[in-house]
Image 1 (cartoon, rainbow, N blue to C red):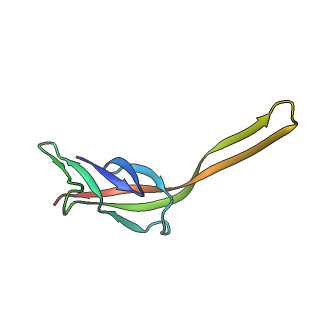
Image 2: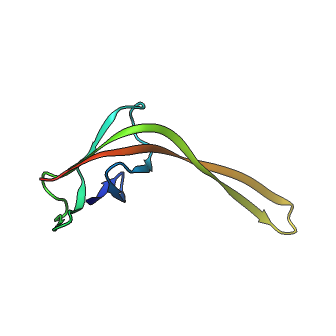
Amino acid sequence: MYAIVEIAGKQFKVKQDQYIYAPKMEGASGTEVTFDQVLLLEDQTDIQIGMPTVRGASVIGKVVDHVKGDKVIVFKKKRRKGYKKKNGHRQAYTQVLIDKILKP
């Protein structure tokens, strides 16, 4: 069984006992979160497609940790002008463990 869930404007395909890295959200480690924007729900026998969401379906997860992604280097240069600029960025993510997928 899997579900496609919308979290902070991004879509994730989730299964039970799976870890996902969602955009940073509020909540301390160990906090339970509920995602009710379920776009698709698939069981072994049938598929439910939402218009735009599946009514009554939700996904329950637990916040494991707040982490940072890999560093992205931004390097700007204009040749023969003496202009160089180096910048870096690390995106903040929340690691979530999917506990249950609740069907309607």
